[in-house]
Image 1 (tube, rainbow, N blue to C red):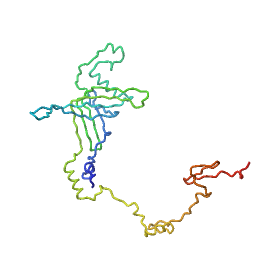
Image 2: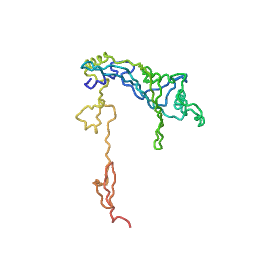
Image 3: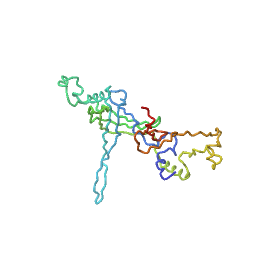
Image 4: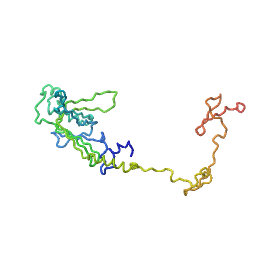
Length: 294
């Protein structure tokens, strides 16, 4: 263990067994579903781009206590969350938004034509049920036994932001829907790292100063040792190797420049050409005019 092994002690499974639960969760591993009154089963939102995890803010007030300042907690506010959903051709999310709006509002969004728009009632109505959406469930599941479930209670849509169409943009169209809510819960099946885990990691590092974190050093050339290290040059001709392989044979070297051409140095004279031989550039002399046929 070295001084820079703090991350290993905190995030690794070195002192733990079973599921790999000491590593950070991934952002891309999640599913979202909605429980609402018109559906016997939750609506699974499989065509979404992202969702915001609920957050909250503590309200506080600073009071004077003679010459000292005292902070008093006065309440808690839940920060709205946003779901970004794709505007797919099957109109699944579009239908859900229309059904939600029809639960609370009489208006043009659900009218069939212009005459219906003129004659039908408009405005906020009194619904039979106050909450059309009972809960939003965000499930972050990494393995069979490891999951994190966030359930948002009594969410209300406060803003539906449709996308802007653009001839110069080929990206998919999306909806951005903002929700306010009355509360939420978070449940995780992972095991929290305790102080005992840190103590065990420290004791392991002290008792095993030469520990290499599970990696084994390997000499890549251990199998190819020679009998006489001082006679390495002779191995190419004598074939004196320690393995059971056949002795090495001398391979005649082919002359790569049989015409004794000059190496190209950047300039050519009239009639000269360049020839590439084994990656090097050579100058081919201009043909002799006396040997040329008319």
